[in-house]
Length: 107
Image 1 (cartoon, rainbow, N blue to C red):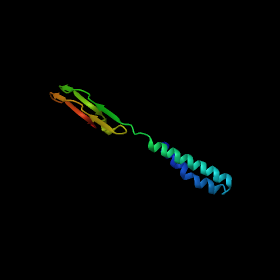
Image 2: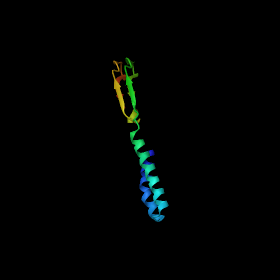
Image 3: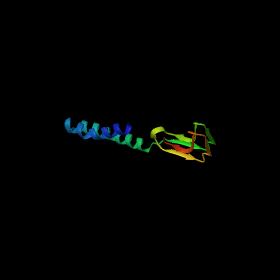
Image 4: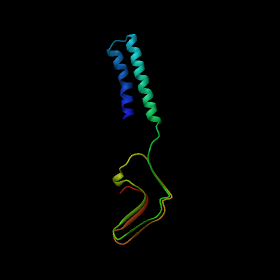
């Protein structure tokens, strides 16, 4: 959202200056506006990207139609950011219709 607002500020700067007449006051105001827009855009761009992480989560066991998962679940691919899974352990499924998994589950 911040990136969109910053881009809008940057794009609006020449319009404000040209529509109001190229006087000194308008030039100063437009310069401040573009400076603020660029600063906000750079700040938003440099923010760390957040994601999901799972490490050493242990074992998962499922039986008779059950479901077990070590790691990260993102049904239907939902979720934002990256997903990282390390050393999640074993997953075991026994019985009809059961499932077990490690890592990232997009189903």
